[in-house]
Image 1 (spheres, rainbow, N blue to C red):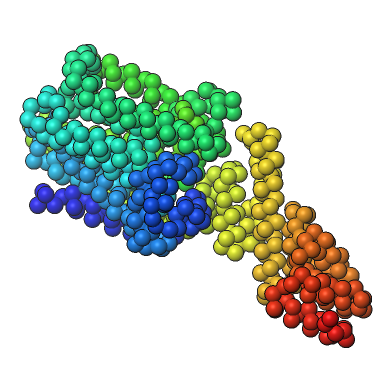
Image 2 (image 1 turned 90 degrees about the vertical axis):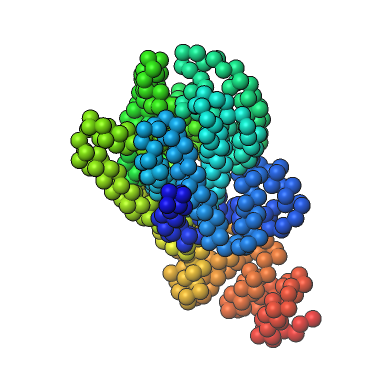
Length: 597
Protein backbone atom coordinates (compact mmCIF):
# COMPACT_ATOMS: atom_id res chain seq x y z
CA UNK A 1 0.00 0.00 0.00
CA UNK A 2 2.79 2.43 0.88
CA UNK A 3 4.27 2.04 -2.59
CA UNK A 4 1.04 3.41 -4.03
CA UNK A 5 1.13 6.62 -1.98
CA UNK A 6 3.05 8.76 -4.55
CA UNK A 7 0.59 7.60 -7.23
CA UNK A 8 -2.35 8.55 -5.01
CA UNK A 9 -0.76 11.97 -4.43
CA UNK A 10 -0.46 12.45 -8.19
CA UNK A 11 -4.09 11.37 -8.72
CA UNK A 12 -5.42 13.76 -6.07
CA UNK A 13 -3.38 16.58 -7.61
CA UNK A 14 -4.79 15.80 -11.06
CA UNK A 15 -8.38 15.93 -9.79
CA UNK A 16 -7.76 19.28 -8.09
CA UNK A 17 -6.54 20.90 -11.31
CA UNK A 18 -9.17 19.54 -13.71
CA UNK A 19 -10.58 23.06 -14.43
CA UNK A 20 -7.20 24.01 -15.89
CA UNK A 21 -7.82 21.60 -18.76
CA UNK A 22 -10.68 23.84 -19.94
CA UNK A 23 -8.42 26.85 -20.34
CA UNK A 24 -7.78 28.57 -23.65
CA UNK A 25 -4.57 30.25 -24.71
CA UNK A 26 -4.48 33.66 -23.04
CA UNK A 27 -3.22 36.95 -24.45
CA UNK A 28 -0.14 36.87 -22.25
CA UNK A 29 2.68 35.20 -24.21
CA UNK A 30 0.54 32.18 -25.19
CA UNK A 31 -0.49 33.79 -28.46
CA UNK A 32 3.06 34.94 -29.22
CA UNK A 33 4.48 31.51 -28.42
CA UNK A 34 2.02 29.13 -30.05
CA UNK A 35 -0.34 30.92 -32.45
CA UNK A 36 1.62 33.80 -34.00
CA UNK A 37 5.13 32.37 -33.84
CA UNK A 38 6.32 31.72 -37.43
CA UNK A 39 9.26 29.64 -36.16
CA UNK A 40 6.94 27.22 -34.36
CA UNK A 41 4.79 26.17 -37.30
CA UNK A 42 6.69 23.44 -39.12
CA UNK A 43 8.45 20.43 -37.68
CA UNK A 44 11.97 19.64 -38.87
CA UNK A 45 15.66 20.24 -38.33
CA UNK A 46 15.23 23.97 -38.92
CA UNK A 47 12.78 24.24 -36.08
CA UNK A 48 15.04 22.11 -33.87
CA UNK A 49 17.97 24.46 -34.54
CA UNK A 50 15.73 27.39 -33.74
CA UNK A 51 14.73 25.87 -30.38
CA UNK A 52 18.37 25.62 -29.31
CA UNK A 53 19.35 29.08 -30.53
CA UNK A 54 16.37 31.34 -29.97
CA UNK A 55 15.94 34.00 -27.30
CA UNK A 56 12.23 34.24 -28.12
CA UNK A 57 10.44 36.50 -25.60
CA UNK A 58 13.73 36.95 -23.69
CA UNK A 59 14.10 33.31 -22.58
CA UNK A 60 16.58 30.58 -23.39
CA UNK A 61 14.68 27.32 -22.79
CA UNK A 62 15.45 24.72 -25.50
CA UNK A 63 14.28 21.71 -23.47
CA UNK A 64 10.96 23.41 -22.77
CA UNK A 65 10.59 24.16 -26.48
CA UNK A 66 11.15 20.47 -27.23
CA UNK A 67 8.17 19.53 -25.06
CA UNK A 68 6.05 22.18 -26.76
CA UNK A 69 7.14 20.76 -30.10
CA UNK A 70 5.86 17.36 -29.00
CA UNK A 71 2.57 18.95 -27.96
CA UNK A 72 2.27 20.57 -31.36
CA UNK A 73 2.88 17.25 -33.10
CA UNK A 74 0.17 15.60 -31.00
CA UNK A 75 -2.39 18.37 -30.57
CA UNK A 76 -1.68 21.05 -33.16
CA UNK A 77 -2.93 24.32 -31.68
CA UNK A 78 -5.53 22.76 -29.39
CA UNK A 79 -4.81 24.29 -25.95
CA UNK A 80 -6.20 21.23 -24.16
CA UNK A 81 -3.11 19.18 -24.99
CA UNK A 82 -0.69 21.83 -23.74
CA UNK A 83 -2.57 22.17 -20.47
CA UNK A 84 -2.79 18.39 -20.09
CA UNK A 85 1.00 18.09 -20.42
CA UNK A 86 1.44 20.86 -17.85
CA UNK A 87 -0.82 19.05 -15.42
CA UNK A 88 0.87 15.68 -15.93
CA UNK A 89 4.27 17.25 -15.21
CA UNK A 90 2.89 18.90 -12.07
CA UNK A 91 1.46 15.58 -10.87
CA UNK A 92 4.82 13.91 -11.51
CA UNK A 93 6.54 16.66 -9.52
CA UNK A 94 4.14 16.08 -6.62
CA UNK A 95 5.02 12.38 -6.65
CA UNK A 96 8.77 13.10 -6.81
CA UNK A 97 8.48 15.55 -3.93
CA UNK A 98 6.64 12.89 -1.91
CA UNK A 99 9.60 10.55 -2.48
CA UNK A 100 12.12 13.30 -1.68
CA UNK A 101 10.30 14.24 1.51
CA UNK A 102 10.21 10.64 2.68
CA UNK A 103 13.93 10.21 2.06
CA UNK A 104 14.72 13.29 4.12
CA UNK A 105 12.46 12.18 6.97
CA UNK A 106 13.89 8.64 6.95
CA UNK A 107 17.40 10.05 7.25
CA UNK A 108 16.83 12.57 10.03
CA UNK A 109 13.92 11.09 12.04
CA UNK A 110 14.25 7.28 12.00
CA UNK A 111 12.24 6.98 15.23
CA UNK A 112 9.00 7.78 13.35
CA UNK A 113 9.73 5.93 10.11
CA UNK A 114 6.38 4.11 10.08
CA UNK A 115 4.60 7.47 9.87
CA UNK A 116 6.84 8.97 7.18
CA UNK A 117 4.91 7.77 4.09
CA UNK A 118 1.78 9.53 5.33
CA UNK A 119 3.58 12.68 6.46
CA UNK A 120 5.39 12.86 3.10
CA UNK A 121 2.10 12.41 1.24
CA UNK A 122 0.52 15.21 3.26
CA UNK A 123 3.51 17.51 2.58
CA UNK A 124 3.40 16.72 -1.14
CA UNK A 125 -0.31 17.53 -1.31
CA UNK A 126 0.18 20.68 0.77
CA UNK A 127 2.67 21.80 -1.86
CA UNK A 128 0.82 20.49 -4.93
CA UNK A 129 -2.76 21.68 -4.31
CA UNK A 130 -1.84 25.11 -2.96
CA UNK A 131 -3.35 28.00 -4.99
CA UNK A 132 0.12 29.48 -5.54
CA UNK A 133 0.76 26.57 -7.91
CA UNK A 134 -2.10 27.51 -10.26
CA UNK A 135 -0.21 30.03 -12.40
CA UNK A 136 2.52 27.52 -13.24
CA UNK A 137 0.00 24.79 -14.11
CA UNK A 138 -2.87 26.69 -15.78
CA UNK A 139 -0.72 29.00 -17.92
CA UNK A 140 0.50 27.11 -20.98
CA UNK A 141 3.55 29.36 -21.38
CA UNK A 142 4.79 28.58 -17.88
CA UNK A 143 5.76 25.02 -18.81
CA UNK A 144 9.35 26.05 -18.05
CA UNK A 145 8.61 26.37 -14.32
CA UNK A 146 6.97 22.94 -14.12
CA UNK A 147 9.49 21.07 -16.23
CA UNK A 148 12.58 22.62 -14.65
CA UNK A 149 11.23 22.04 -11.13
CA UNK A 150 10.45 18.40 -11.90
CA UNK A 151 14.01 17.89 -13.16
CA UNK A 152 15.47 19.91 -10.26
CA UNK A 153 13.65 17.82 -7.63
CA UNK A 154 14.45 14.60 -9.48
CA UNK A 155 18.13 15.52 -9.26
CA UNK A 156 17.76 16.25 -5.53
CA UNK A 157 15.89 12.98 -4.90
CA UNK A 158 18.60 11.04 -6.76
CA UNK A 159 21.25 12.85 -4.76
CA UNK A 160 19.53 11.81 -1.53
CA UNK A 161 18.98 8.15 -2.29
CA UNK A 162 20.09 5.89 0.57
CA UNK A 163 23.86 5.34 0.84
CA UNK A 164 24.27 3.56 4.13
CA UNK A 165 26.02 5.77 6.68
CA UNK A 166 24.70 9.33 6.73
CA UNK A 167 28.11 10.91 6.23
CA UNK A 168 29.04 8.99 3.10
CA UNK A 169 29.45 11.02 -0.05
CA UNK A 170 26.72 10.21 -2.59
CA UNK A 171 29.20 9.98 -5.48
CA UNK A 172 27.86 6.94 -7.39
CA UNK A 173 25.38 8.21 -9.97
CA UNK A 174 26.46 11.82 -9.54
CA UNK A 175 26.79 12.19 -13.30
CA UNK A 176 23.06 11.47 -13.62
CA UNK A 177 22.38 14.22 -11.11
CA UNK A 178 24.47 16.51 -13.34
CA UNK A 179 22.48 15.44 -16.41
CA UNK A 180 19.16 16.16 -14.69
CA UNK A 181 20.54 19.49 -13.49
CA UNK A 182 21.63 20.45 -17.01
CA UNK A 183 18.19 19.60 -18.39
CA UNK A 184 16.57 21.65 -15.62
CA UNK A 185 18.73 24.70 -16.36
CA UNK A 186 18.08 24.38 -20.10
CA UNK A 187 14.36 24.36 -19.30
CA UNK A 188 14.46 27.45 -17.11
CA UNK A 189 17.46 29.57 -16.22
CA UNK A 190 16.10 30.17 -12.71
CA UNK A 191 17.22 26.67 -11.71
CA UNK A 192 20.88 27.77 -11.74
CA UNK A 193 20.51 27.66 -7.95
CA UNK A 194 20.85 23.83 -8.07
CA UNK A 195 24.55 23.71 -6.98
CA UNK A 196 23.79 25.73 -3.86
CA UNK A 197 20.71 23.60 -3.17
CA UNK A 198 22.86 20.45 -3.32
CA UNK A 199 25.31 22.02 -0.89
CA UNK A 200 22.40 22.66 1.44
CA UNK A 201 21.52 18.97 1.24
CA UNK A 202 25.15 18.20 2.07
CA UNK A 203 24.77 20.39 5.15
CA UNK A 204 21.43 18.89 6.12
CA UNK A 205 20.34 16.11 6.09
CA UNK A 206 23.51 14.44 4.69
CA UNK A 207 25.79 15.98 7.31
CA UNK A 208 28.75 16.34 4.94
CA UNK A 209 29.15 20.04 5.78
CA UNK A 210 29.22 21.73 9.15
CA UNK A 211 28.39 25.29 10.11
CA UNK A 212 31.53 25.36 12.23
CA UNK A 213 33.76 23.48 9.72
CA UNK A 214 32.44 24.22 6.21
CA UNK A 215 35.54 22.79 4.53
CA UNK A 216 35.63 19.53 6.50
CA UNK A 217 35.03 17.38 3.39
CA UNK A 218 36.94 18.79 0.36
CA UNK A 219 35.19 16.28 -1.87
CA UNK A 220 31.94 18.12 -1.35
CA UNK A 221 33.30 21.18 -3.12
CA UNK A 222 35.27 19.31 -5.77
CA UNK A 223 32.29 17.28 -6.98
CA UNK A 224 30.18 20.46 -7.25
CA UNK A 225 32.63 22.17 -9.61
CA UNK A 226 30.88 20.91 -12.79
CA UNK A 227 27.53 22.06 -11.39
CA UNK A 228 28.82 25.57 -10.72
CA UNK A 229 30.45 25.78 -14.15
CA UNK A 230 27.21 24.68 -15.78
CA UNK A 231 25.17 27.16 -13.75
CA UNK A 232 27.59 29.97 -14.62
CA UNK A 233 27.39 29.23 -18.35
CA UNK A 234 23.60 28.92 -18.44
CA UNK A 235 23.28 32.04 -16.29
CA UNK A 236 25.36 34.04 -18.78
CA UNK A 237 23.21 32.80 -21.66
CA UNK A 238 20.10 33.79 -19.71
CA UNK A 239 21.45 37.30 -19.13
CA UNK A 240 22.33 37.53 -22.82
CA UNK A 241 18.75 36.55 -23.72
CA UNK A 242 17.42 39.33 -21.51
CA UNK A 243 19.93 41.92 -22.75
CA UNK A 244 19.54 41.24 -26.48
CA UNK A 245 15.74 41.50 -26.25
CA UNK A 246 15.85 44.79 -24.28
CA UNK A 247 14.11 43.16 -21.31
CA UNK A 248 16.98 43.68 -18.88
CA UNK A 249 16.52 46.96 -17.00
CA UNK A 250 19.78 48.90 -16.45
CA UNK A 251 20.75 50.30 -13.07
CA UNK A 252 20.25 53.84 -14.41
CA UNK A 253 16.50 53.17 -14.69
CA UNK A 254 16.10 51.01 -11.57
CA UNK A 255 18.72 51.68 -8.92
CA UNK A 256 20.01 49.49 -6.14
CA UNK A 257 17.51 50.86 -3.63
CA UNK A 258 14.50 49.90 -5.74
CA UNK A 259 16.01 46.47 -6.38
CA UNK A 260 16.59 45.93 -2.67
CA UNK A 261 13.01 46.97 -1.88
CA UNK A 262 11.69 44.58 -4.55
CA UNK A 263 13.82 41.74 -3.17
CA UNK A 264 12.65 42.33 0.40
CA UNK A 265 9.06 42.48 -0.80
CA UNK A 266 9.52 39.17 -2.60
CA UNK A 267 10.87 37.42 0.50
CA UNK A 268 7.85 38.53 2.51
CA UNK A 269 5.29 38.12 -0.29
CA UNK A 270 5.65 34.36 -0.73
CA UNK A 271 5.56 33.78 3.02
CA UNK A 272 2.42 35.90 3.25
CA UNK A 273 0.65 34.22 0.32
CA UNK A 274 1.63 30.74 1.49
CA UNK A 275 -0.28 31.37 4.71
CA UNK A 276 -3.11 33.43 3.17
CA UNK A 277 -3.50 32.48 -0.51
CA UNK A 278 -6.17 35.05 -1.33
CA UNK A 279 -6.16 37.90 -3.84
CA UNK A 280 -3.83 36.10 -6.25
CA UNK A 281 -3.15 37.72 -9.61
CA UNK A 282 -1.10 37.07 -12.71
CA UNK A 283 0.51 40.53 -12.46
CA UNK A 284 2.00 42.38 -9.49
CA UNK A 285 3.62 45.65 -10.53
CA UNK A 286 4.91 48.81 -8.88
CA UNK A 287 1.44 49.99 -7.88
CA UNK A 288 0.80 46.69 -6.10
CA UNK A 289 4.02 47.05 -4.10
CA UNK A 290 3.32 50.68 -3.20
CA UNK A 291 -0.02 49.72 -1.63
CA UNK A 292 1.58 46.93 0.40
CA UNK A 293 4.88 48.40 1.58
CA UNK A 294 4.74 46.65 5.01
CA UNK A 295 5.38 43.35 3.23
CA UNK A 296 8.78 44.68 2.15
CA UNK A 297 9.57 45.48 5.79
CA UNK A 298 8.48 41.97 6.78
CA UNK A 299 10.68 40.49 4.07
CA UNK A 300 13.69 42.52 5.12
CA UNK A 301 13.24 41.54 8.75
CA UNK A 302 12.83 37.88 7.85
CA UNK A 303 15.84 37.85 5.53
CA UNK A 304 18.16 39.48 8.05
CA UNK A 305 17.04 38.55 11.55
CA UNK A 306 15.66 35.09 10.85
CA UNK A 307 18.75 34.09 8.90
CA UNK A 308 21.08 35.43 11.59
CA UNK A 309 19.06 33.84 14.41
CA UNK A 310 18.85 30.45 12.76
CA UNK A 311 22.56 30.51 11.86
CA UNK A 312 23.50 31.29 15.47
CA UNK A 313 21.21 28.54 16.75
CA UNK A 314 22.64 26.04 14.27
CA UNK A 315 26.16 26.77 15.53
CA UNK A 316 25.06 25.58 18.95
CA UNK A 317 24.05 22.27 17.39
CA UNK A 318 20.31 22.92 17.29
CA UNK A 319 17.95 24.08 14.57
CA UNK A 320 19.90 22.77 11.58
CA UNK A 321 16.67 21.69 9.89
CA UNK A 322 15.14 25.15 10.30
CA UNK A 323 18.25 26.84 8.91
CA UNK A 324 18.48 24.43 5.97
CA UNK A 325 14.81 24.95 5.03
CA UNK A 326 15.06 28.71 5.33
CA UNK A 327 18.23 28.83 3.24
CA UNK A 328 16.60 26.57 0.63
CA UNK A 329 13.79 29.12 0.40
CA UNK A 330 16.21 32.02 -0.04
CA UNK A 331 18.61 30.24 -2.41
CA UNK A 332 15.96 28.95 -4.81
CA UNK A 333 14.10 32.25 -4.68
CA UNK A 334 17.16 34.42 -5.26
CA UNK A 335 17.15 34.31 -9.12
CA UNK A 336 13.59 35.69 -9.06
CA UNK A 337 13.99 38.44 -6.47
CA UNK A 338 14.95 41.22 -8.86
CA UNK A 339 18.58 41.89 -8.02
CA UNK A 340 19.08 41.37 -11.74
CA UNK A 341 15.95 43.19 -12.81
CA UNK A 342 14.10 42.00 -15.90
CA UNK A 343 10.75 43.53 -16.83
CA UNK A 344 8.48 45.45 -14.51
CA UNK A 345 6.87 42.56 -12.64
CA UNK A 346 7.73 42.69 -8.94
CA UNK A 347 6.74 39.17 -7.87
CA UNK A 348 4.84 36.27 -9.46
CA UNK A 349 2.96 33.26 -8.08
CA UNK A 350 4.99 30.91 -10.27
CA UNK A 351 8.24 31.97 -8.60
CA UNK A 352 7.09 30.25 -5.41
CA UNK A 353 7.11 26.79 -7.01
CA UNK A 354 10.53 25.54 -5.89
CA UNK A 355 11.17 27.74 -2.83
CA UNK A 356 7.97 26.87 -0.96
CA UNK A 357 8.54 23.11 -0.89
CA UNK A 358 10.83 23.82 2.06
CA UNK A 359 7.87 24.92 4.17
CA UNK A 360 5.84 21.81 3.28
CA UNK A 361 8.78 19.57 4.21
CA UNK A 362 9.28 21.44 7.49
CA UNK A 363 5.58 21.08 8.32
CA UNK A 364 5.76 17.32 7.69
CA UNK A 365 8.79 17.06 9.98
CA UNK A 366 6.82 18.93 12.63
CA UNK A 367 3.97 16.40 12.39
CA UNK A 368 6.44 13.52 12.74
CA UNK A 369 8.07 15.13 15.76
CA UNK A 370 4.70 15.72 17.41
CA UNK A 371 3.72 12.10 16.84
CA UNK A 372 6.98 10.90 18.42
CA UNK A 373 6.42 13.15 21.43
CA UNK A 374 2.87 11.83 21.69
CA UNK A 375 4.01 8.20 21.63
CA UNK A 376 6.66 8.91 24.27
CA UNK A 377 4.10 10.56 26.53
CA UNK A 378 5.56 14.08 26.37
CA UNK A 379 2.46 15.38 24.58
CA UNK A 380 -1.11 14.24 25.08
CA UNK A 381 -2.41 11.99 22.33
CA UNK A 382 -5.44 14.18 21.66
CA UNK A 383 -3.13 17.12 20.88
CA UNK A 384 -1.46 15.17 18.08
CA UNK A 385 -4.81 13.90 16.78
CA UNK A 386 -6.20 17.46 16.76
CA UNK A 387 -3.19 18.89 14.93
CA UNK A 388 -3.14 16.02 12.42
CA UNK A 389 -6.87 16.42 11.77
CA UNK A 390 -6.40 20.14 11.21
CA UNK A 391 -3.51 19.46 8.85
CA UNK A 392 -5.61 17.04 6.82
CA UNK A 393 -8.61 19.37 6.86
CA UNK A 394 -6.62 22.22 5.29
CA UNK A 395 -6.07 20.16 2.13
CA UNK A 396 -9.68 20.25 0.84
CA UNK A 397 -9.81 23.95 1.70
CA UNK A 398 -6.70 24.63 -0.38
CA UNK A 399 -8.03 22.39 -3.15
CA UNK A 400 -11.24 24.40 -3.29
CA UNK A 401 -9.32 27.66 -3.58
CA UNK A 402 -7.13 26.12 -6.28
CA UNK A 403 -10.19 24.91 -8.21
CA UNK A 404 -11.57 28.48 -8.19
CA UNK A 405 -8.22 30.00 -9.14
CA UNK A 406 -7.96 27.63 -12.12
CA UNK A 407 -11.21 29.12 -13.42
CA UNK A 408 -9.56 32.55 -13.45
CA UNK A 409 -7.14 31.25 -16.09
CA UNK A 410 -9.85 29.85 -18.40
CA UNK A 411 -9.67 32.83 -20.79
CA UNK A 412 -8.04 36.22 -21.21
CA UNK A 413 -11.02 38.26 -20.02
CA UNK A 414 -11.40 36.38 -16.73
CA UNK A 415 -7.63 36.48 -16.18
CA UNK A 416 -7.24 40.24 -16.58
CA UNK A 417 -10.58 40.96 -14.93
CA UNK A 418 -9.28 39.35 -11.73
CA UNK A 419 -5.99 41.23 -12.03
CA UNK A 420 -7.88 44.51 -12.52
CA UNK A 421 -10.03 43.85 -9.44
CA UNK A 422 -6.89 43.35 -7.34
CA UNK A 423 -4.84 46.26 -8.68
CA UNK A 424 -7.00 48.74 -10.67
CA UNK A 425 -4.20 51.34 -10.64
CA UNK A 426 -1.92 49.27 -12.85
CA UNK A 427 -1.68 50.64 -16.39
CA UNK A 428 -0.24 47.35 -17.61
CA UNK A 429 -3.27 45.46 -16.30
CA UNK A 430 -5.77 47.95 -17.72
CA UNK A 431 -4.11 47.79 -21.13
CA UNK A 432 -4.16 44.01 -21.29
CA UNK A 433 -7.68 43.88 -19.88
CA UNK A 434 -8.77 46.23 -22.65
CA UNK A 435 -7.06 44.09 -25.30
CA UNK A 436 -8.78 40.98 -23.95
CA UNK A 437 -12.16 42.74 -24.05
CA UNK A 438 -11.44 43.96 -27.58
CA UNK A 439 -10.62 40.42 -28.72
CA UNK A 440 -13.82 39.20 -27.07
CA UNK A 441 -15.79 41.88 -29.03
CA UNK A 442 -16.88 43.59 -25.83
CA UNK A 443 -16.20 46.98 -27.36
CA UNK A 444 -17.90 49.26 -24.85
CA UNK A 445 -15.89 47.80 -21.95
CA UNK A 446 -12.69 47.85 -24.01
CA UNK A 447 -13.13 51.53 -24.80
CA UNK A 448 -13.70 52.28 -21.12
CA UNK A 449 -10.52 50.38 -20.18
CA UNK A 450 -8.38 52.28 -22.70
CA UNK A 451 -9.86 55.73 -22.13
CA UNK A 452 -9.21 55.60 -18.38
CA UNK A 453 -5.46 55.49 -19.07
CA UNK A 454 -4.21 59.06 -18.80
CA UNK A 455 -1.03 60.79 -17.64
CA UNK A 456 -0.48 58.25 -14.86
CA UNK A 457 0.74 55.87 -17.57
CA UNK A 458 4.16 57.55 -17.52
CA UNK A 459 4.79 56.64 -13.89
CA UNK A 460 8.12 54.90 -13.78
CA UNK A 461 8.78 55.51 -17.48
CA UNK A 462 11.30 57.75 -19.15
CA UNK A 463 9.80 60.42 -21.48
CA UNK A 464 10.45 58.45 -24.68
CA UNK A 465 8.82 55.33 -23.28
CA UNK A 466 5.90 57.38 -22.01
CA UNK A 467 5.25 58.92 -25.43
CA UNK A 468 5.50 55.55 -27.15
CA UNK A 469 3.14 54.00 -24.65
CA UNK A 470 0.54 56.76 -25.12
CA UNK A 471 0.76 56.32 -28.87
CA UNK A 472 0.05 52.63 -28.41
CA UNK A 473 -2.93 53.35 -26.15
CA UNK A 474 -4.35 55.81 -28.68
CA UNK A 475 -3.95 53.18 -31.39
CA UNK A 476 -5.82 50.64 -29.25
CA UNK A 477 -8.57 53.17 -28.48
CA UNK A 478 -8.94 53.87 -32.19
CA UNK A 479 -9.12 50.15 -32.93
CA UNK A 480 -11.76 49.58 -30.24
CA UNK A 481 -13.98 52.41 -31.53
CA UNK A 482 -13.47 51.33 -35.15
CA UNK A 483 -14.37 47.71 -34.41
CA UNK A 484 -17.39 48.85 -32.42
CA UNK A 485 -18.50 50.92 -35.38
CA UNK A 486 -17.97 48.03 -37.81
CA UNK A 487 -20.04 45.79 -35.55
CA UNK A 488 -22.89 48.32 -35.59
CA UNK A 489 -22.63 48.64 -39.38
CA UNK A 490 -22.93 44.88 -39.86
CA UNK A 491 -26.14 45.02 -37.80
CA UNK A 492 -27.56 47.76 -39.99
CA UNK A 493 -27.15 50.63 -37.51
CA UNK A 494 -24.96 53.19 -39.38
CA UNK A 495 -26.29 56.22 -37.48
CA UNK A 496 -25.02 54.76 -34.19
CA UNK A 497 -21.73 53.80 -35.83
CA UNK A 498 -20.86 57.37 -36.91
CA UNK A 499 -19.69 58.68 -33.48
CA UNK A 500 -17.46 55.65 -32.99
CA UNK A 501 -15.74 56.13 -36.33
CA UNK A 502 -15.33 59.81 -35.44
CA UNK A 503 -13.69 58.80 -32.16
CA UNK A 504 -11.43 56.35 -33.98
CA UNK A 505 -10.25 59.19 -36.25
CA UNK A 506 -9.73 61.43 -33.23
CA UNK A 507 -7.27 58.90 -31.79
CA UNK A 508 -5.69 57.99 -35.14
CA UNK A 509 -6.24 60.88 -37.59
CA UNK A 510 -3.78 59.50 -40.17
CA UNK A 511 -5.76 56.31 -40.78
CA UNK A 512 -7.12 56.11 -44.34
CA UNK A 513 -9.29 53.19 -43.22
CA UNK A 514 -10.70 55.41 -40.49
CA UNK A 515 -11.72 58.05 -43.04
CA UNK A 516 -13.21 55.36 -45.27
CA UNK A 517 -15.23 53.74 -42.45
CA UNK A 518 -16.60 57.09 -41.30
CA UNK A 519 -17.44 58.03 -44.89
CA UNK A 520 -19.32 54.74 -45.38
CA UNK A 521 -21.31 55.23 -42.16
CA UNK A 522 -22.19 58.79 -43.20
CA UNK A 523 -23.16 57.59 -46.67
CA UNK A 524 -25.44 54.89 -45.23
CA UNK A 525 -26.92 57.52 -42.91
CA UNK A 526 -27.79 59.76 -45.87
CA UNK A 527 -25.25 62.46 -44.95
CA UNK A 528 -23.67 62.77 -48.41
CA UNK A 529 -22.09 66.19 -47.94
CA UNK A 530 -20.12 64.89 -44.95
CA UNK A 531 -19.34 61.50 -46.49
CA UNK A 532 -17.68 62.80 -49.69
CA UNK A 533 -14.76 64.63 -47.94
CA UNK A 534 -14.05 61.50 -45.90
CA UNK A 535 -13.84 59.30 -48.99
CA UNK A 536 -11.67 61.92 -50.68
CA UNK A 537 -9.30 61.98 -47.70
CA UNK A 538 -9.10 58.16 -47.72
CA UNK A 539 -8.37 58.04 -51.47
CA UNK A 540 -5.80 60.83 -51.20
CA UNK A 541 -3.98 58.99 -48.42
CA UNK A 542 -4.18 55.65 -50.25
CA UNK A 543 -4.85 55.99 -54.02
CA UNK A 544 -5.18 52.22 -54.43
CA UNK A 545 -7.98 52.00 -51.83
CA UNK A 546 -10.49 50.70 -54.39
CA UNK A 547 -13.43 50.39 -52.00
CA UNK A 548 -12.93 54.05 -51.15
CA UNK A 549 -13.06 55.01 -54.82
CA UNK A 550 -16.16 52.90 -55.44
CA UNK A 551 -18.07 54.47 -52.56
CA UNK A 552 -16.81 57.95 -53.44
CA UNK A 553 -18.14 57.41 -56.95
CA UNK A 554 -21.45 56.27 -55.50
CA UNK A 555 -21.72 59.35 -53.27
CA UNK A 556 -20.73 61.74 -56.09
CA UNK A 557 -23.31 60.16 -58.40
CA UNK A 558 -26.03 60.64 -55.79
CA UNK A 559 -25.05 64.32 -55.51
CA UNK A 560 -25.33 64.71 -59.31
CA UNK A 561 -21.61 65.13 -59.88
CA UNK A 562 -21.63 62.64 -62.72
CA UNK A 563 -18.26 63.51 -64.30
CA UNK A 564 -16.43 63.22 -60.97
CA UNK A 565 -18.20 59.93 -60.26
CA UNK A 566 -17.23 58.58 -63.67
CA UNK A 567 -13.58 59.47 -63.02
CA UNK A 568 -13.60 57.38 -59.82
CA UNK A 569 -15.19 54.34 -61.48
CA UNK A 570 -12.72 54.50 -64.38
CA UNK A 571 -9.83 54.81 -61.94
CA UNK A 572 -10.97 51.56 -60.34
CA UNK A 573 -10.88 49.82 -63.73
CA UNK A 574 -7.50 51.35 -64.58
CA UNK A 575 -5.92 50.02 -61.37
CA UNK A 576 -6.60 46.44 -62.56
CA UNK A 577 -8.70 45.27 -59.60
CA UNK A 578 -10.13 41.87 -58.91
CA UNK A 579 -13.20 40.84 -60.99
CA UNK A 580 -15.69 41.68 -58.23
CA UNK A 581 -14.61 45.31 -57.90
CA UNK A 582 -14.34 45.65 -61.68
CA UNK A 583 -17.94 44.49 -61.96
CA UNK A 584 -19.02 47.10 -59.39
CA UNK A 585 -17.19 49.84 -61.30
CA UNK A 586 -18.87 48.83 -64.59
CA UNK A 587 -22.24 48.78 -62.84
CA UNK A 588 -21.57 52.32 -61.61
CA UNK A 589 -20.73 53.46 -65.13
CA UNK A 590 -23.85 51.78 -66.48
CA UNK A 591 -26.03 53.67 -64.00
CA UNK A 592 -24.38 56.89 -65.17
CA UNK A 593 -25.18 55.98 -68.78
CA UNK A 594 -21.53 55.63 -69.65
CA UNK A 595 -19.97 52.82 -71.66
CA UNK A 596 -16.90 51.04 -70.27
CA UNK A 597 -14.05 52.00 -72.61
